[in-house]
Length: 207
Picture 1 (cartoon, rainbow, N blue to C red):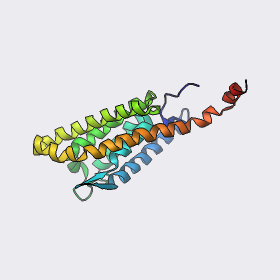
Picture 2: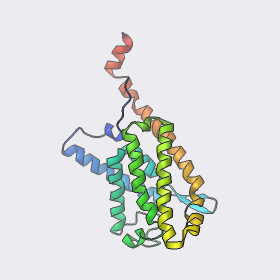
Picture 3: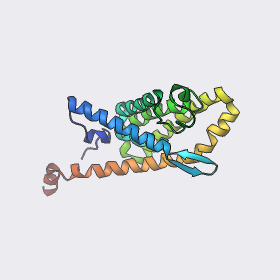
């Protein structure tokens, strides 16, 4: 039995036409709602409140693939740019473009790149393999953190940027990488069960 190399979202998409486009738009909107909810969900790990947004980006991009995953992140950024309180620090610490150009600006841009990397891996079937997916997500995490560090360093200097913008999040984000890299392949295996027990597969077994 051949292993699918398309992301999970392909199971829910009509083949073509307006129905496919409408479904993709609906999924992108649902994805932005999940991103907002994850940004507002915080887990206390030591002295730092860590949001679940990184985990949500991992899961959405792995399920949606690169194009729809990136489109979902860009839609979320557009919502934030027009003033909707979709980010972790909004509206308490500001809204709109002003907030996006603040201390978290590099991380927000990094989320888009993260979605591209993980989505690219999912498009090639890596979402079926925990080790491959973990490696892709780890690279995406490093790139995102590097972008966040670089932008924050311009605002407060590299030493403080490393101390407050990177170090406190290393353990928590590694946990999220491992969790996402375990969950997605498990869901993919479950989704392949109906395909395995198709009429054609049963015929092969009987023969």
